[in-house]
Image 1 (cartoon, rainbow, N blue to C red):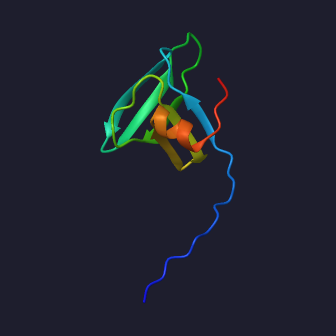
Image 2 (cartoon, rainbow, N blue to C red):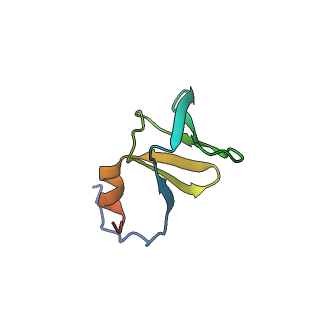
Length: 84
């Protein structure tokens, strides 16, 4: 018989930023977007995975350089401590 057991997750600290009106993003391929911040200085472009259209207030989370992804605000706040 298959038996499920309970396991406690390891605590993790995530690096993330919240999308706001200074950011521009566009879909660049299947489930991949790129985001840039509107400034007069050098533009930093970050690619990330997203399976739904990001909106202002959502989060971009980076676990590693290869693992950067979109997270809705509701899900991010449910899974992380956000001080605001």
